[in-house]
Amino acid sequence: MAAEDEKLHIVMFPWLAFGHMIPYLELAKLIAQKGNRISFVSTPRNIDRLPKLSPNLSIEFVKLPLPKVDNLPENAEATSDLPYDVVPLLKKAYDSLEEPMRKFLQSSNPDWVLYDFAPYWVGKVGAEMGIKTCFFSIFNAACLGFLGPPNEMMGDGPIRTQPEQFVVSPKWVPFPSPVRFRYFEIMRIAKGIVPNDSGVSDIYRIGASAKNCDLVSVRSCSEFEPEWLDLTQTIYEKPVIPVGQLPTTGGDNGDDDNETWLLMKEWLDQQKKGTVVYIAFGSEAKPTQEELNEIALGLEKSELPFFWVFRARCGEYDPNALKLPDGFEKRTKGRGLVWTSWAPQLKIIAHEAIGVFLSHSGWSSVVEAIQFEKSLVLLTCLADQGINASVLEEKKMAYSIPRDEHDGSITSDDVAESLKLVLFKEEGKIYRERIKEMKEIFVNKERQDSYVDSFLNYLKVNKRVNY
Image (cartoon, rainbow, N blue to C red):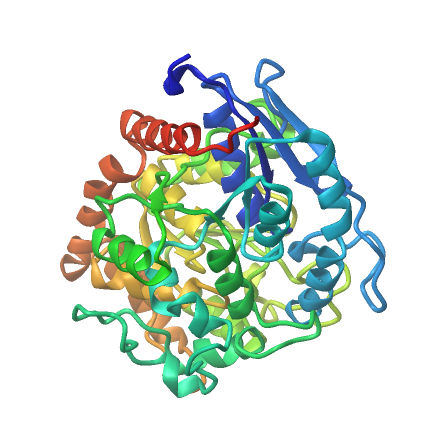
């Protein structure tokens, strides 16, 4: 049988964040649509919260109960259930899945395992068991390239430990690039640089994931960041294969006549085309109270209509609830809508009334904005968002609200001016046009299929041989 005709059994093991699980699920769907079998492994509560799939796809959801860890709240199984400073305990619990995962791999005998940065131990487990492994990164190649060679991330080289070392282009980047973190961004994720309550740093996890796998795949495409893909392959010293941008396909867990959506749609239908500011910061990002105050006052000053998906807490265990300024909703009544529960983002962004998306720069949100040609204004919060924003700014695909480089503070005047600039001012025209230009690269179905086909062909040709 020719390699291209073979069908694979692939295990997928994403980190416990919906910004990771959803791209993994999108890739799983594309792989399964081509006749391959997927075992999608996560914890019970997360699997129950994922979008429902077509029963025709050969995707089996495998539930591994999350082990208990001191001070990790009961039923907290995703980053969206927890404040940011408790997430290291979730990683500690996740690491305790190594033995259950080993037993599952032994019983299922897959051709390949695709795993995320957090379970850095999967590569070694696979090698011990003779199973091929692929580190599938939902971080783009610019982020991987900026973080550097695996040995450096794991501390075998002159590892970067000071924030100042992350605000300049690193020595291994051979081309001129403005891509970097800003000082306040790296300070907010400082726990990711050094070992945390999980026992290891996030940077170590990424380095070990890259070092111990047989292959690296990236949520990216060569038309978007060829230089970073080439660099990542050079410093990783192994194949790095882009699998496309994986735009979200449905899965809002609600029908078009869902009562929640109909209420939103009724309000959006009353707004003029391309005039509404949509504000959402993802499932785990959370502005500070000071930032939130300035965002709210900036929206008032802008006099623009807005739809704000407002999350006061990062999960029910977050003790520090954000509060809107006194009288804000009353003063903006009719012009703005503040939504405090779950919202179907894909449907909202797709609506013709939305003109600009004020986002945290999470990559799934970026891809969704491009998918529906919505201009981007950025306010980063944590993780890889600073690098994402830096890449988008370099390519004039998004505009970041001006911030104090040291503490990240913003002003309401800058919020208002940024939104108006990108929405309708002449000097913001480049951002509106560039998003439309990028749609062909990011969400072209034939191109996406081609990336998945190339990836699968590599997996088939290089899968383990059973004697």
